[in-house]
Image 1 (cartoon, rainbow over the protein chains, first blue to last red):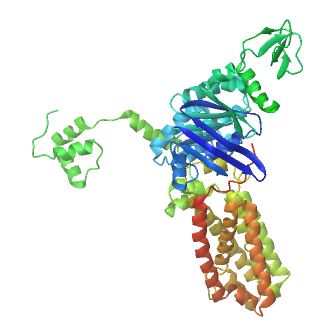
Image 2 (image 1 turned 90 degrees about the vertical axis):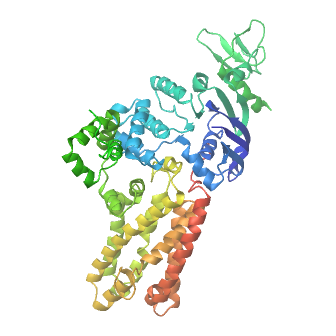
Length: 282
Length: 295
């Protein structure tokens, strides 16, 4: 599924959460990267047809989120994991995913239950299918959320901060799962964790105060920092960022901090910091 | 197994082997004709995987609740029944609170203001329904899965009227019980006035208070569609209070003015118009979408 955003804006009173966003997102896994308050959740909610834009358009395979009938078509092809995942604690895992499958128009019980079992197996929850949701850990609940998002085999998967609250092992397993899911569909993954994007995303959109600062491949974002990352004893005052690493040296992003500094290979995080700092200094 | 002679119903047997239900004539024939019975056995293929899916589907199927079964008996599809019974305001705790409100109204009616038997219930009768309505559509804490459910292809109009109807009917039953209890302790004159106004199916008009309750709930829904459920409930409740206060102030017979035939006709008209307008506006925009933060 292709997502095309044209001059998309959304305001809450005087606060502009999205400011004339233009972007094209295609199949594969796209990371929506930005700090808290950048407008990531607002953008995902517009794409999930939960919020109307104040102006501009969001089209998913040509369907506009602003038109009634087209919105239903979008919802038929959508899997959505919200940031604040709400589940019914008194439901069993199977019951909850089955309930959402019903609402996603899987009405034939045999087929629906097969899909529910498949979704639970995909997130490795088949052994706790009969357990009440209130007895699950935070990571397991997150996986229930992913199971409900994928149960109807959506073409577009919107995941809002999906790794929040997961421990390192769960995060690795989650990346593997999303990597598999992204092989045959469009996945839009909102996060403020650069390592999530570096690990699984094929493209990245950097949002900052409602504006798109960068869109492209993670390698391109990393390339932005080429020749601007140094290992040095001291940081120059005009450095974008600097921090001490485990070898005792400072990692400095910005212009050459002085004699003795040696250039180092940039990471995605360096590119992200550089792109966002450009806005700060302008 | 050799095939039976052409006089046997081969085509029908093959259709049965593929899943068609045999009629009584064919069953009788199969019982009396070993050749055709053998032919059917040779053609019928047991798909173990498919059979297992059916068994598993039955085993996995969550047990429907009593309210779900009741809705199913009324012909409501399973998915809509399950959606409807998830309304927070139909959970036992909420219904308990509604019952307490109505019990208090009943108690006040019986003990404190027997000469104004209609005033207190008239004001309070819409409260549980309005609060229940607000909770039925409130996002966040009231319905934790609100955001996920809203992103499904479920028709907003269907969702609206299913939940609105369920809240109204449930509260109608509670109000009916409260009215009957209150009425049983009043004088004959007051009881008749109370019944004619508030009790379904008694007095000169059935659904005495149900129509105004529905109209007020629809007003609340219309406001909520563009604001927040709590604002909708406040506007709906406020409008009802104003109507009761003004009627009491200007009319020599407030009860007759509030619950009389002309008033009921006006309520019915308002319900029809409001339902039409609500269905239109609801389908146009996402429901309660303003109840989200900036991020």
